[in-house]
Image (cartoon, rainbow over all chains, first blue to last red; front, side):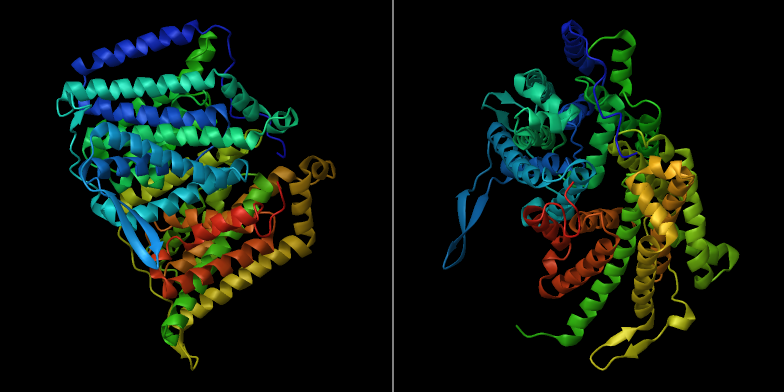
Length: 341
Length: 291
């Protein structure tokens, strides 16, 4: 009881990257063809959550940090992007004898700039929250991230620019780089898909970099990594900030897809959902979060009419995953065929 | 700034009431964590079940508040024991985070079932007739029921502290927390102790729920947001110390009450802000030992 003998880890790792390449090709192919068969707005929403889950997985799966407040970065980036694209007003308070507002800009922004600034904002929030949360380990880390996210939820509820209970709507899609009209559903889908794939590849690259190897070493044995001379807190903070920024990227795309930003995306239940998606798909697998996100979003979509049963089923999936298949869907497949996914 | 004394005392009183619940709930969390190494995310849901148990006992069995005060913790604690036997006992060898995830799932199921059945609006529960009315303290009016909640919560907290720190049973418990294998070698049934400890922690949550029922409406979501605040309380106090959990719980309730009076906009967030300040200055928590 005092020593945890099984940690949250990836399945046995094979040496070849071939399985990952093939799986990636299949994923791209499926996502390219799917809009012909499935309602595209649903797919775009699922892609946002898939990227969100991948960002979350970077922490839990590869550093062993359970952030129970990832809705903070997703939801706040969503607010930032929606506000910048719709209103665009940025005011910064400053002190000159009394508090004054410095208004930097006052006109709606083009989507790419709104998204860029929203991601930057999420990264800053991640840097601040991360530097507070990494002061404690394990279970405390989870509780602290949850509490910080709840604090920012109340700020979102009270801040004037978020529209409180109403949220920000409608968010105009606008023209990307002045060229591509995002109001066109096909153009929008390609845009979301490209952003998702870029985010996905970035995470893949990070995991397989020397930096990623250190992260995995921290996951396996932090004390050992420290004794080898790694400043693990710095690695953890960089990973946390990166994860927050990518979660922010997912959140910044979402208001353009669904054309609103709301309190749902900053609520603790959203933090719980991203944990569920990743757990169901497979912690510490590259493709698991994608599969998990599509499964959960599809389930919510088809069971929406059943009200509270969605929550009950989600809770049940949590319990079943923890008790019976901790590897998740992709983790079980990878384990079955002894490949890396 | 002109201070309106009755209003200030009113908020202080509400703060003490909230503090009573923070103390009871964080105490339960600390007791469970000490023994099981699991953060019981279902604690808020079990608090809610306590309130509902009181409501059901009155509606379907005609048993009043005083019966509920005894029976609800026993019933919900019993359910807790079943949960430990059915689910939690398989997790002790795993990473602690799985316990958090599993109990989070249980909380979703329990809250979902109650919401499915009773919606999100509150059900009324009357203050017992013996405790209605108010007492004039000269500077403010103290409703009898609120005085009872504060007193009862203090008594239960101190009783628990006494049991764990000063009795033989408590010594076994503390020993089993430190080194379960050795305690088992002495012939003490540690697994049973773990089960009962979980049941006891859950019973504390249910007791808090019964006491909360007449103050807040009985509502399926009453524990959902509360548990996150209690997590912050636990982070501030550190879970290493039983007395720490009690003192932090009451203290933060009072601070929250004061904030409601002086700066109402921040009353929802003040505990989280304090958590940040404590983490920056004393990372191990006020009463915690460094990990």
